[in-house]
Structure formats: structure tokens, C-alpha cells
Length: 444
Length: 167
Ligand SMILES: Cc1cc2nc3c(=O)[nH]c(=O)nc-3n(C[C@H](O)[C@H](O)[C@H](O)COP(=O)(O)O)c2cc1C
Ligand code: SF4
Ligand code: FES
Image (cartoon, rainbow over all chains, first blue to last red):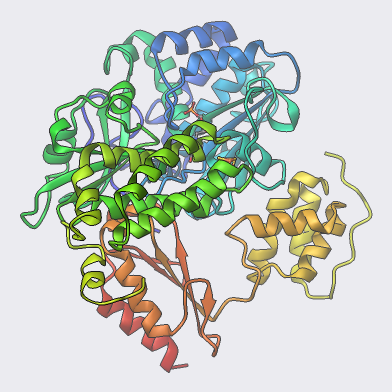
């Protein structure tokens, strides 16, 4: 396994720590970066409502995609009737091109587990699960090791740090189904079932694992918890933009000079990220777009490079924060081909439970295939747009609802590329097999 | 967490079944141990076949259809034995943008099989994956569990030819 070194860390690093002397397999080393200071403080000096209040005032929002306020989620689970309650950490990290959570779990396993333990105290849970992709064996090994050491030092188990609070954490392995990152599917998977999402409400906060109230947060969300409780809500809220607080870890990859992980304050512009931190586009090529938000996200063209990156601005641009993958594309990428790539992804990862997603993604994929082969008409394009709307509004879970997004976003900013394929039978980037079609009858 | 004392009888006296039984026991033979148990089968045997599924169904007291349903839903579980060597090509976005499709095409030509298939001599299984979490090194190919970044066609060819022509 490869160790990823953070590419760039700002003054205010919260999630990634620039300290290579820390051995992620040694609990003693975690003390060097104030490990368990927050947990000790919380257990001995704060009530659960006080912890939730700190989280709410910090402005922390979920790092797993949608940016739901973390404090509010904790409060809902704390208030929910029923016991036992569960805490789940979502380490499924399914978006292709995203590797932030892998790094956080491998490099700072104790920090994620400390965040989960604080959450358990705040909501009144006694059992936690961390669900990790099976493709991340090193993360699994380090988490299991960290759990064992925490149990030995009484940071997990019965009467933690001599208080009445008890909490256990188990690791659960994913098994290569993208849809299992969706919270209700993930819960089904922990229960030993097929990972089919179910309609919400009821939300997991009320009806989650084994029918009990369940808190589910992303890896990076949990990694922010201990620093917030150590340094205070005001400190955290002073970083970032008005509605998006703190920092965000992004995984930069694709056509970029320096690929890697970065942690930047919310509100940093794409230009700073791509050109200053990432060193721009290599080989003298021109920037075309950056793709964020994975298969539910979109492509952002150069006109918007100066927009500060936060949850709202990305949504306004027709994209999505997602978990933090940023894939940079240059003039050698065809946007129709990229849209087709993501549709193929959604089509094969669709769990098949609901018709709009199962059938709709396949139809949209066929239409996009026609377009890249130069076989489509403008009517096909109109049909594609209608389907986008239908699948987005009628699918059951976020996978189907988000599947049309890469198409809609590329149509919004790169419509001319679609038109070139359809009308001129030409791929401006020279990627698609349209030319061949004009000269001779070649099937795909 | 109440362990059931009557443990299911394994299909054979192959010692590896003990690992599988141990996983089920650790989870008190509860139905929610299904995915963990399938992982344990795959780790011990390399794949999950019908016989293993029937054993797991008995052990966790689940209908065989439910075990089969889960084993086929999750892509990670292999239902057939794999070749001596495995070659996994990442087709995640970052790798795609950096030419993973060409890398895959090259490997298909070299091995003569498509993703998900094994060469007739059982030497090499070709597989594809959705992001290995090593996107900074795109395009990524995993050869026998070892991550190879910036996969160059020449180096891959050399490796695969070594596998197919020797030993
Ligand atoms: C198809 C799909 C895939 C998802 N994949 C992930 C994932 O890999 N990791 C993650 O943390 N959240 C993922 N989510 C979001 C989760 O459903 C959930 O909202 C999130 O884990 C909540 O954590 P947060 O509030 O801390 O962001 C996914 C959602 C959908 C619809
Ligand atoms: S939208 Fe797609 S992935 Fe989600 S439940 Fe429906 S078929 Fe399954
Ligand atoms: S896209 Fe290939 S490793 Fe992430």
C-alpha cells in the first residue's frame, strides 16, 4: 500500500496534521497531537447537551456529501425515542477519484475513533460501527489496531476513563457496492442484507440500524469533532465562509501537475486550488473543467475558477461538494465522453430497486452512446434532457437522483460539444469515435 | 451476543472451514454476520461457491436464497476460482481521465480475456475496479495485490508476459 503525503496544509489544519513523527499504530504517539484531550474533557466536564451545543455553534456540516448540519443531526438522534442507539462512521468512500477518507483512516485512526466516542456520549449510544471499503485493507488493519489499543487503555469499553460511560466500536467491511455509501443501504449491509436503499423518512436518526435510532456521519466529519471540542466552537466558526465553516480535505487528481491531498479553508477558490496548490495543468495544455461531487456531481468550467468553494457555491454552479474528489480535465477530455462515463457508472451501480433509476440510467447511457458515435439527432438530445428531469425527480435514493447531474452540468457549460457530435459529427477533443463513423460503417 | 453451541458441520474436513466457523461464532451465529462470514470464506478459499453458501446458510440459519442474494449483490465476492495471478485495472474517474481505457485494452489483447475472466490456462484473471483510492498515481493497476501507479504499457506487458510464459 502506498502512503500518501499531504500536498499542502494551510496554517489552520484540522483534519490532517503535518507531523510525520506520529506513528498511526501507536496510541502513545496520538498523545503528542493532544489525543484524547477532548474526550477526557467531554466525559468529565461536559453534559451531552453541552457537547451538542458546541457542535451546533461550530457550524460543522457533514463532509459525506450533502452538508447537513452535524449538531442538528446529533440532537435529533439524542432526542429520538428508543434504545439502544448506534453510532456509524461511513468509511465507504465510493466516489471514484476520492481518497481523502482512506488517508484519514490510515493516518489518523485514533482521531476518527475519538470523534465517534464523543458522539456516542452526546447521543447516548453504547455501540458503534465503522464501515470501511474492503478495498482499503491498510485502513481496516489500522482501525482494528487502534480499537484494540483504545480498549487496553480504557478509551473504549466499560466505564471509559473511569466514568459511567461505556462504548464499543466494531469494524465492518464493505463489499464493493457503491450504493452502500448511501446511509440506508449501508445500514442494510451492516445488518447482513443486500445493500438496497429504502425510502426516507423515517430517517436513520429515528429508525436506523436494527430499527433503532442511529447517528451516521462521514469519516472526515468525525475527524473534526475532537479538534472542535478542544479549541471551541468559536475557533472553528472563525474559519471558512458564512455558511460553510472549517476546512475541507480535497483529493486532487487527473490532469494536474501535483496530484494529492490538500486541506484548505472553506471558501478557497478553485483557481488557488488548481493553479497555486496543484501547480496547474501539465504539458502546456489548457484547463477545461474540474469535476467535483463524483457521479452525482458536475464539471466546472474556467469562467468560474474564482468562485470560493463551499457547499452553496458548488450547488449554484450545478455541481456538488460530494466527499471531496476533484478531478481536473484539460482540452484532451471530451465532456460528452465524461458524461457518458459517469452514466455508465450509475447504470452499473444502480441497485435496481426502482424503475426510474434502473431503466432511466440505461436509456440515458444508450442515448449518450449514440451521441459519441455520431448517430444521434437533436431529438435524441431533447429526449435525453427529458429523461434527466424524470430520473432526477422520481428516483428513490441519491444515486438515481444524482445520476443525471453530470449530463445536466456538461449540457449547461459545454452544450457546443454535444452539438458538434450531433450536427457536425465531430468530437472537438478528438476522443470519441465519431469520425470513423462518417468515413465507414463501423459499429461500436 | 448469545453463542449457539451447536456448530454447523463443514462440507469437508478442510481446515479452512474452521476459520469460517470461527467468524460465525464470534458474531454469535447471528444473521447480521452474513457479509463478514462471506468475507471470511473468500479470504480462506479465494472465492465463494455454492457449497460454501449452503454451509453459511446452515450456520447462520438463513434461507440459501438470502445468502446467494447477498453474495451476488456485492461485487467484491468472487463466485469462481481465480487465476494464479490477478490483474486489476482501475477504471475510476481519475484513472479514466489518464488513459485507463487504453491500459485495459492493452491487457485484454495480451491476455486474450475480458474483465471478469480468467485465461484458459488459469494463469491470469483480469479484473476492473472503481477507484483504488490511489488516484494521485493514476492510471493504477493492481498486480497480485500490489498497487502500480502511473502504469506504463511496457512495464505491464513485461509483467504479464512473465506470468504467462514462465513457471
Ligand atoms: C449513492 C450514494 C453514495 C454515498 N456514498 C457516501 C460515501 O461513500 N461516504 C459518505 O460519507 N457518505 C456517502 N453518502 C452520503 C450518506 O448517505 C450520508 O449522507 C453521509 O454518510 C452522512 O454523513 P455526514 O452528515 O457526516 O456527511 C452517499 C450517498 C449516496 C446517495
Ligand atoms: S435510485 Fe437507483 S440505486 Fe437508488 S434505490 Fe433506486 S434503483 Fe437503487
Ligand atoms: S480513480 Fe483510479 S485509483 Fe482512484
